[in-house]
Length: 485
Image (cartoon, rainbow, N blue to C red; front, side, top):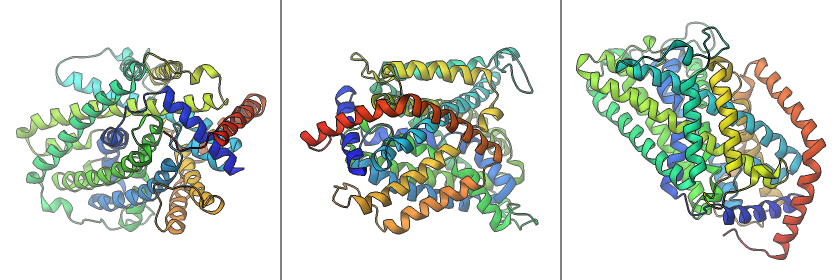
């Protein structure tokens, strides 16, 4: 069963690389895609909450633990991506290893997760953007920055709607154009963050690091060792964006090498950056005051009026950085749409690629409309409750898939092999399951409702279509074997 699925997925990967711009993304751009997603809301918002509420300056140990969890999972992603360099990420890997039923469910869940993740960041971007405009004397009417639902109601969140349309327009026009824009945004964002580190280190007060790991105050997660563990769970979600790298496999140059490079480089660079930011930030200001929407800007303000210029740069970097996160998240979703459609899981129209732009234009338009509606009409707290569990589920599938293929298909060529796989992959599964167990009951209920809807669609529509199509692809690959171009 697994062998037939792999043949079919590899055959589809060949087709995708012929239709898309298969040389559009090199190793630098792949890494930029990962960093754009990982170095987003986590470094501009979550780092402050994790430090103030749970770990104090010891938040750097939380980032190290979270980086380790992300790293072992990224290794498993790298092995599967090198073997099966297909767009669609976890969906494609699940199809190759476990078959259409599990692939449908992980793909169906990822569609929801990517949509709400992108919309959540778009709403966060709107807040930073409006604040930035206010700092230069431009005010936006209340009713145009608040949705009709929630505590503070208005007409719609216009900036969130506009950033969704802007990023999807870039994706529509071409992968090369999108990656160039993303590379520029990532370079600027990293430049400002490195400047924050380089300047901020001269404003560090050693007293702010005492105690480096605050004493536990009685409950689990209230500082101390358990606080570091709780903070690791909070900041781990900053790392989940490296999955976006593997969605680019069909458009990457030499994907067997560049995809593993992009995955691992993303985790290493992001972890190093988070640790350095955490050290400097908690040294500049007392950690108890960092539970704010803009902790980096707060740390800069603590340095005095002489750093006003740096505060403006940090705010601008947040606006630019979050825009890049929206861009790459929608990029990942459009490629999952395309792959599921190409396999017969969704209507064929969503899998069509424009000959002019070499992008899945119909899928991009659907993402733009749905994402804009969600971002414009729903508040960030509702959106935030609908994101995360699907990503952890996909991590479990990927780590399990590596182990299954090591048993069932030891003959397959593995351009990248995980060392000590029987330690690394189970460790990734343990991390993912443990974090899933900490999620609220409402998140699990939402997951089950969404999957129940997917169950009906699978048996009523997708099962027969995908079975017929993938059987033809497997036969084609068997008749004309070869590696993916």
